[in-house]
Length: 452
Image (tube, rainbow, N blue to C red):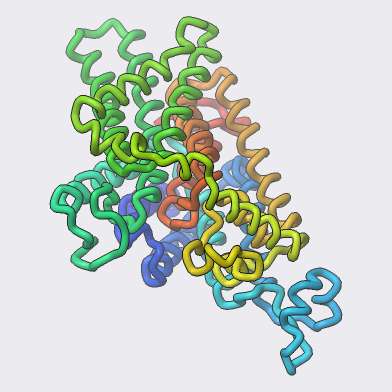
């Protein structure tokens, strides 16, 4: 029975990846709690069947994410005022009116504790994915779940979008109903989610074309291998364009260009270098032909004020000022909304609840120490994926790495000007892809052990 647990874990994780975006991106308390419950249950199952090599593949990044979660918990505790004054003088001064003589390092302890659970869940997904993705057939299940969820987001969102309805699941929500948003309240957050699926679809297409070219098979069989990922990629790209997310569109185009360069580098064929750019131009052409105004109208209507980034530059400066007030341990994991009024310009008060840069917001809320821990895990993961990509691994294994690297490029760019990774569904989906890709790199086992 135990030897089948990895299959059960993969099924549970695939179901989670499909369902996680449905409750408004899992950003609601009950949606986030449901995701956390399933994740930690899957982690318990994975612990029964996990091998040491599974854990080694994601050990450093998983520990880094868990470290951020632990920091959030510690920030939510009450500490002796003398100790708090040493590690966070600003926190001690803000809690000076407390009569208990104790100080919380977070400006919103309850929020930090809840956010720590989300970070812990993301760390758990990274670990669970490494266990579930031990065999290739299970990686296919996970990829199919993400692609299916992304296509569902477009299909479901098309109805309210065409009807200009401001409802999701019959619940009125704020925002612009002329932009496609699926079950995400913010269309930019749907764009961030679709970027992950786009990277997977491109990698699938690369693998399918390699197989079609390599085998001596009929033309119709080659089309069956290559056509589905191509069609899905274009559908996903149109969906992303119809969200009206300028940052998402720029990030997705850059990511597919980067994936094309990786393919050319690996094959040592310079003529393949423009393949990503050609695919991106083809996607832009398809969107323009289907609905230029819907796909690029918001981009074309960008004002000179927006180009100068006046508001964003003000907010970025305020976020950096906030970090300077709490340099070492931050103002509290997830507590940005409660902390930013300390440095926010008066004309922006009450309008910006996030830094619109996940990188800056992380720095301001967990400080240099937390940011360094996160960066260490990220660098380890990127180096591992890069080495795996250039190593002599089977093409299906490398396709997962290509997808992961593409998603990282896309979200690294988009999240420098947005906050899509604060959506638990998007964070969990990215973690699952990265865990599967890291496991596909292998860890000393024969290739036959990971063949599905």
